[in-house]
Length: 420
Ligand SMILES: Cc1cc2nc3c(=O)[nH]c(=O)nc-3n(C[C@H](O)[C@H](O)[C@H](O)COP(=O)(O)OP(=O)(O)OC[C@H]3O[C@@H](n4cnc5c(N)ncnc54)[C@H](O)[C@@H]3O)c2cc1C
Image (cartoon, rainbow, N blue to C red; front, side, top):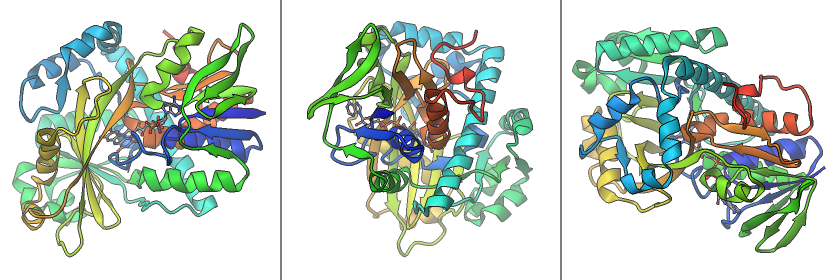
């Protein structure tokens, strides 16, 4: 089949690779002049099946109210934005029941595990280099109750094959000696030994190189203006470089996906949720963490990528605004380094490279993968805070459904029409 994929972030490029590898004629359409220039550019870089729960657990409203107005809050909401898309917020809250949360967390965990395994399989088979490390991830807790809650969450997904180990303070320091100055702040940690990290920008660029080498077309600097077709379904894409006639289209345009599908009556419950990262070069510096870290209290992640440290965090519902608010990214930097005072001292004058991206977040926290009621129109979007982790697994699910094959993983939870 001739298939267009719109959006060359980590998700669209993964889908395009999978389709190309299966022998389809693929056209990957991207408005930027390079791949992975938007949300896949400088994210937290963690591949974490152990931390795949949606962001709307029971009690999310109480937590959100508690965070609002605080200068170092992980959350910021522009009420005008909420009023523009009230149904998303209401549905986000409606999904915060114990039953739905558990169901969505399990489905996300299964896809995350599949995604990490698939990304590693591609890495090994294709020789992709992207500062990948299969080091595991450490999740830190300050509060014994939060640690206990984290243990219960980790135990709940153990049956899916996601291993974890609860660590005492001494065991945490033995696993990551760079945390020695933080010993008196910690209640302990949970180690997810099968998680890891890697640079999604390098991964996406390497995959794009492979797919063009295999004969796929990569149309960079090309905006998909609208999908073409009629009652029989989608038949092409009108782009800034002309029309592409195809048998099927996969929309993988991140937070911008709803704008493309709306004309065909496909409404996607996706809201952009902004986050920040700061990348700091580590040359000549001692005491940086080797393990990727999730700091449960401060709501930041730290990941070592080659000779730089990436710190990421924050969730802002402020529309499509990508402005780099210095106060906000400085908080991310400060909170990330707060467990490492000696490192923070050495990095006081180091350059910081701030970045902001928009997570394409659905109101139930699950991605949207697979066919739509419109013939020829398929989706690979809504991957939220986990798009790097989900990407390679999502690509396989989308390709299997497009070819009407049986999937390795039950695709039902991620379909546009969700089971109730
Ligand atoms: C601060 C932060 C930290 C994160 N940390 C992690 C992490 O540690 N682990 C993890 O798994 N995930 C993480 N994420 C989430 C992850 O980054 C995203 O889920 C993922 O990058 C989304 O990928 P995507 O391909 O769907 O979207 P994008 O990367 O945004 O790609 C969409 C592409 O579509 C293109 N496009 C849009 N409209 C059009 C059009 N009309 N025509 C042509 N092209 C178009 C865009 O230019 C873009 O390149 C993080 C996100 C943020 C913001």
